[in-house]
Length: 491
Image 1 (cartoon, one colour):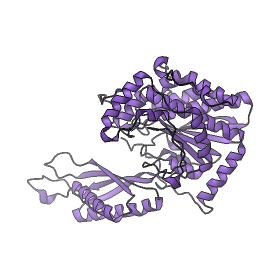
Image 2 (tube, helix red, strand yellow):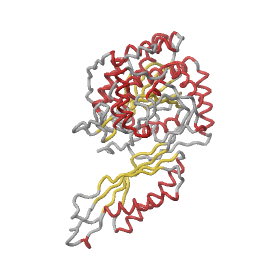
Image 3 (spheres, one colour):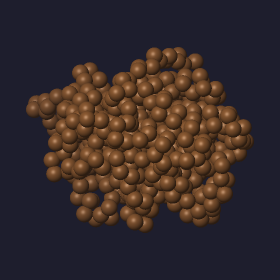
Image 4 (cartoon, helix red, strand yellow):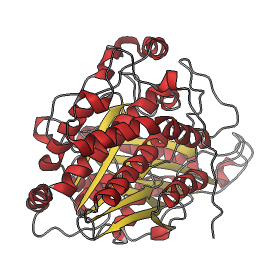
């Protein structure tokens, strides 16, 4: 049995977290529906506690499948709110499903909490590394999990007070950054009874598009050679690093002869121990992405062929372990339009003078990529995938979207112009700018879920669209195959 981490909530000064004096509270700014006004007002009151939870997870900065403190903190909060929490689902110790209510409809809310390696910096407007810390929340998942939990609790409260039938589930999803945890959760059938899944993601703008994303497959290729003295007897050695470099060279030549919108990235994770020793072992970590997963499969096969050719040409051996693989997002216009309207009701993020000064300093680090920091207060116009609403990234939410109608949004948790996976996004995720964007997400998720509970016709329409787009002959096959969760992929 896991030991739960009982957290002491850190109170954040209301002056920093409060809305700008020039902005009305969200409860008064758009919603006239009594239930929505109640939800918005309650989330405003809870912001200091939610900010404290998100900051604790930011401080934990736990890498994929190592999020023991982060998941335990969220689980404990949900238990205290009356949820039935099942931990260790799908063979993953840090994954959980928290459930409240009964009957239909069943709505799931996805939450993430894993950090990225190498992005440990203080929550300051200049890069300030944190010595000894392996990871940092450069994708804002400390905010992601907290906002999703908050929305689930608000819906729980509404179900309880209204007596409305329905079930709310929060899915605690670790290792989104390359670990593909949701794929194992889909494969385990954990979404089989869900009618709609909601999610969000930290970002540099507020938008709720019917967009898609890039399918992705990744693996570590491990070459094995023969060690020898690099000067005295090099002829007796076979360099595993030569195998890696030969593979990389062939893949880089291949880029000219693949669809131009394909993305291939790699990093050499092991290259040897000393220059005077022919490396007996070397490793390279590869990603392939495209919006069409069939293209990902085709390009991946050629990368495997390159690995085998490199091994043969260098007299080494190669084996590879597929660590992750995710589908493209299946967009749902019906659900996205509902979420977009609720995001417009909630509105964007207004900065205090202190936050404005922070944002301006961050913006100065962007060079030619600067955009007005006031964009954080705006809600972008609605777009669907046919209008180019395609993310340059990948997410295991993609697999969920092929298992159940799914919709998401992004909010301005970072200074406009920020890139994900950067020290700038890490810094903003640990302070009030990120926490305000988190609140926008929690409100929008809760209002969208409320609309779906009260209007089953929306779910029926969304499901019909989903079935039409998915196709009647669709059969789910995970891109990562039938392997067990790669729990050690960050070790």
